[in-house]
Length: 185
Image (cartoon, rainbow, N blue to C red):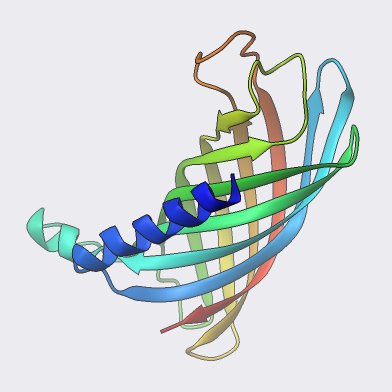
């Protein structure tokens, strides 16, 4: 599974590079995941991820979009150490779109949405497979220390489902609180 994840992330970088997208920033996140697994009770864990932000201006120019903020494509690989209902793990890669609003040089709020691929070691009655998809939406803000660095706070809602690939497919919903450090180029 680790080799597949590395291959997926590597292919994503290659595709973005070939399409002319430049890297605009790298963000490092950690935080807390909280949800419910119907058959096992609470679902808690600590994610660690690295988000690679790519400039979407080549697409904006082709579509004649004149946006006031910054639109980025995000590739975010990571892992989650799950503590409840048992010691488990998740390995994931998210593919997101992030729109940052220009408030001023110090405060930069943003919206984020997309989906990911995830493998979890947890066996649950909610999911018929350990390989799942994770549509998600989030809101956050950067508090800039200078032009190149910021502290970041983000809330994200994530739904985990196998997209009806195998029964059962009841899904697992979690709330995520993330904190991080962002580096801009």
